Image 1 (spheres, rainbow, N blue to C red):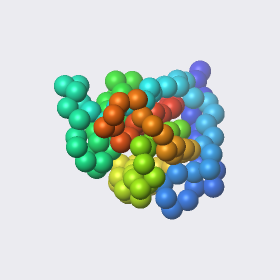
Image 2 (image 1 turned 180 degrees about the vertical axis):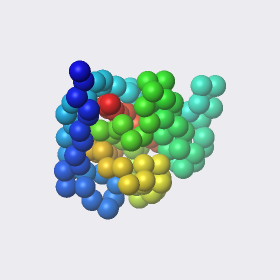
Image 3 (image 1 turned 45 degrees about the vertical axis):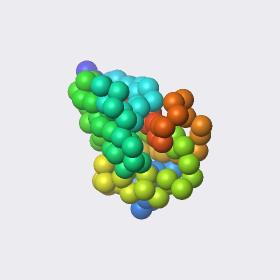
Image 4 (image 1 turned 90 degrees about the horizontal axis):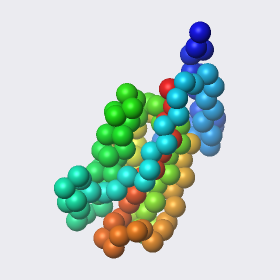
Length: 126
């Protein structure tokens, strides 16, 4: 008999993440590779908002393929190409995740392809 997954956000805050996210009794872990800010047809939005929303849509697509949703996220790592994108990134993340508070890391990085402004990788559990 399988125990039901228990989750606990540790020190959640009002900027849509927790300092830690504890899970126990889970059945599966899903490791989502860095999701790109473009669609399957390789169309890259020109603005940050479009790229960020596309990367989140790609994360959501991977979750759906595994029978999960954003509520299953326990860890998210976001890579931004520039520090000035932090605030808009937070606003979009908050809109996408609502009150859900996974553990979170945001890294300012030189991304793989020129023109990319964001990449999002994640871990989910159920």
